[in-house]
Amino acid sequence: MKKQKMTSTQVIILGILSAFGPLALDLYLPGLPVLQKELHTTAAMTQLSITATMFGLAIGQVLIGPLSDRIGRKKPLLIGIIAFTLASFGIAVSDNIQWLIFLRLIQGLGGATGIVLSLAIITDSFEGIQLTKNVAINQTINGIFPILAPVLGGILIAIADWRSTFWLLAGLGAILVVAIFFKLPETKQKVEHVTMKDTFTSFKHVFTNRFFMTMTLVQALMMGALFAYIAGSSFVLQDMFGVSVPEFSAIYAFNGFGILLGASISGKMAEKHVPQAILKRFMAVSVLGGLLLLTTLFLPKSLLLVSFAFFLIVAPIGGISSMTTAIAMAHEHRDSGTASGILGLTRYAMGGIMSPIVGLGGTTTMVPLVLTILAVQFMGSAIFMLTQKRLAG
Image (cartoon, rainbow, N blue to C red; front, top):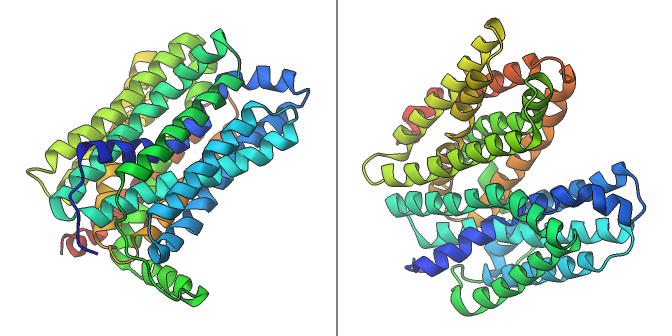
């Protein structure tokens, strides 16, 4: 299908769709204790509602991506967001935790369509510098929501209750269904007579694409530092340095703004530099932050120094994510839905791996956190440097 120009409105719609993960996960987090009491359940069952959504978001991407390569983007996107909307409505009126967990799974599966197909549609519609810039714009819009979601959720829960967060998601979903139907074009031509063999062929094609898989691995490893930070920073800052919850929230939001800024800057840099050169610079800053965090283990305790190290580690992730995605997807136009699904799955898989590793040391030392961050950073950097010449071709 011929490449199509996309309007700024369409790009914004795709950016919001790509943020369904953090929206579904983060918006209701401040209300978990209240939810647990109201539904007369345990903390473990309440946490399972998060796991169900994570599972849906991860699995949904690798199921929907290949399907969209065969039947087109718009129909599965509409079905997925309708499912997300109905699930959000169901959660808002749930009166037991089992039903809520099931609907959270459906919500994750539906939301996965927004994540995987927004990137696939961008890849269908752009190439070269325009692809790089629009991926960066997509990541910038995406980066706004992890900052806003917990704050907005806290406000909603304070003035209403935890159910209000899901009413908001249902309303947003309904608006996006209308926006998709009237504003987004079909960017992938339907393939007739699709078989299961065709789907496996798509996976084989993507998994054997050396360039794509290299950047997927680099992205997963470098984002591993972000997931390690998410898993361990609250314990380090609150338990070891004694910061209050509002102070931690401010630090967390500031670092989130850094990610947003990194994605935005990388998009501007794409006008004058190739993605590989931009990626190299962002990776260098993040590794520098990891090394600075290592030095804090041998210095007197300093909240300012540790916070600055965290910022250097986390802020470049916006640019790293944008550039690795742009490079990877530029090498996989044929099965871009499948490719987008694999990228999404590896991110969530890395997030699941980091949390228990960082938690091995308990809450009395940040050595496991520091070593985990440095390990993934050095592995990601080494793989990128070893293959940089081939990727440049």
